[in-house]
Image 1 (tube, rainbow, N blue to C red):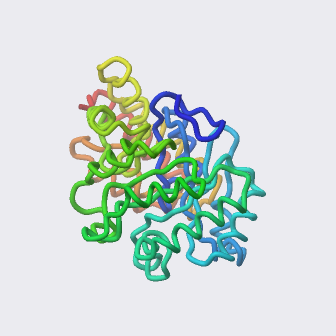
Image 2: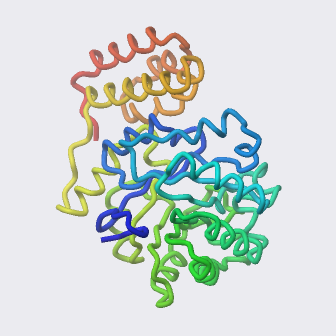
Length: 330
């Protein structure tokens, strides 16, 4: 049984990665329904929180049915991070997660996210202060290093554990790589198999099939995997991986009725949470994946992504279900 303090996550937990404008409450609810064991929110700016920015505060919304859930925060200034942690605690999450992995320039140029990988001593000081400032379990998500010449993750993992973090998720790329190339899990395995390490180690990067999840579990010995881009528009991946680990067999692919229902549920929840305009806008990134591999789908996809009328989109979804009722997904 993998545990973060007293939070039981199962024998090989599957974590939903924090993804900006993706892993919001409507999407997390779907992933939870389809087998995700631990949720992380979109990453939240400490500076935004302490300035009471509406978008940052909105990201603090969590619901009982999605627990356990961690709220992820990023920032580079100690006082701001501590104050943000105090604000986060008021929403009663299960975990506070520190983002040391975001590669986006507007974050890294301020020394936050993966930017702090250029100043490991500061990373450790900041982490230690946050651990001491909260009674909640603190976890960290980071990368192998800033670039190929600074892959210090084995040593960094030890130091983070020494100052009190209770789990570590590692994305198998450097900041310079961004999301390009293949994730390198070799160093993730070295961290997990380091005899000094006793906290759960979760691997992240390129897990998009049940076979890959099992392969990485067996080769690198990680305690669980964190899944990001492969879940966008396809929340079924979590239960598919669990079933494959348990039986060695594949679950049938969700049919058109299941996909339309998930899309409809996601859309309506998104509109309820964000309002109609923003809720519809931020659904557009999901449609292609929900209906991936359908032949001659371009016209319907265009109708979905260009319409801002809720009833029109729901009507289009009904048309899709009728039009492709006999389509078999592979």
